[in-house]
Image 1 (cartoon, helix red, strand yellow):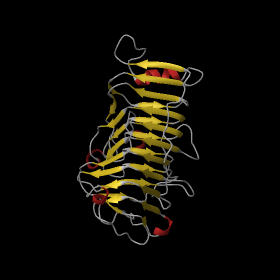
Image 2 (cartoon, helix red, strand yellow):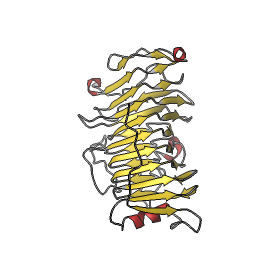
Image 3 (spheres, one colour):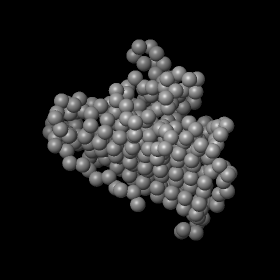
Image 4 (cartoon, helix red, strand yellow):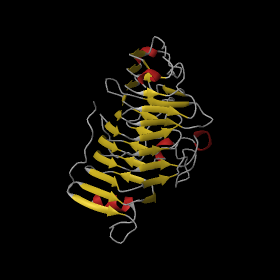
Length: 308
């Protein structure tokens, strides 16, 4: 069983909301003030919709929502930034974190730019850090909802692949998602970071594009993506994943898949050498017992109906 994240003790407490009792009206204003404080900090956010792009560059910070708290923005990769340059994937996130020991609870983060075939990639949450915990949060977008840094060193044309938002690099990046809802369409959980998704609900939305839950670019000898006791569903057929880079590593264990899971399960993204990819399914439940190709590993498959 995964270790359930607990709210960490913080030395300072700030409040955000529209009432007179709150210290700040905007979340980013509270984060900027927290940057000036010595020691750890918790930011408590009152119910409301916050139309902001949030960037976090400090450590030991908690963001906790009270009631229905939503952070929404709508940046797409095809649009141009303030300098007139095409924004690209890694400057679209509604929430960007570049730090460690960050805890978030009961917050919905959404990128409302639209479908990938219309606006390009549109990230809801982009993480470049470690010891990051999300509890009872909702992450929603279409293509590329959740980006888990680090990025691959180069793009497929050999040029450096990096985001100008990143100020500090972490050789090992680890995060935990507990009882979260994550929805999207194409490659909507992707990147090189190691992450555990425990008792989460993963949902593929409808769009004209082909749905892939994951696109891992796991560095060699790191943990990759682990989905444990999750429920996976789709408005249309979906693949479990495809390898963004050759050492992609993804595990589903004790998960439940609906009938929209495609028969093949996974896609190789035209990778010439499948032997480097580590894709596993263990003790999962299916509406139709699957058969997998030899480059994939599946053990203990169970009939979903028999469980009920």
